[in-house]
Every structure is written in structure tokens, then in C-alpha cells.
Length: 114
Image (cartoon, rainbow, N blue to C red; front, side, top):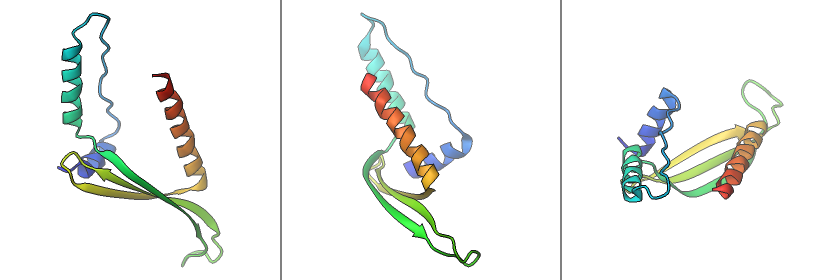
């Protein structure tokens, strides 16, 4: 199963974050590193290689004559662990994009504390 297919399966089955354990001072860190490597291998996590975005405006549709609705399109290029490249694209309304941006800022702030 490719990473993209496993992502779809995981998204359908709901969140299932991996358990995380901490090791104390003087603990066998070699075992902890090995366990982390095994976890990463089992999750088969890809790596984001490129992000492209585009701001668009939906002007009209067959249902609505005067739509005038802005949106953001994101294109993610992902390198799967197998070496294959995968592309995912999605569109968000401006409020959805603002929420997405807020969540990324929160993640960045959290990562700075680690």
C-alpha cells in the first residue's frame, strides 16, 4: 500500500496518534532510538518536498450566476518512503485557510519550545 493510500485509510478510520514514551536521565537511549525508528518505519510517513499555492476567485457556476467567492488551492508534493512522488491538492475557503494558518502558527510555536 502506498503512503497516499495509507493516508486515505487513516483519514477514514479517524485519528490514532502513536503512543509516546519518555526516557529518564541515564536510561538506555539506544533502545529508545531503535523503538522510534521502528515506529517511523511502521507508520511509513512521507516527506513534504514542495508546497505550491494559488489564490482564486470563483465567479459563477451553473447554479449561481454571481458567486464571487475567493478560495486558496494548495498543491503538496510528497516523497513516499518507497521513493515514489505523490501529489495532493485541495481547496479551502478563506475562513478555512485562516483556520489552517492559525493551526500551523500554533504548531510552529510549539516546535520552538522543543
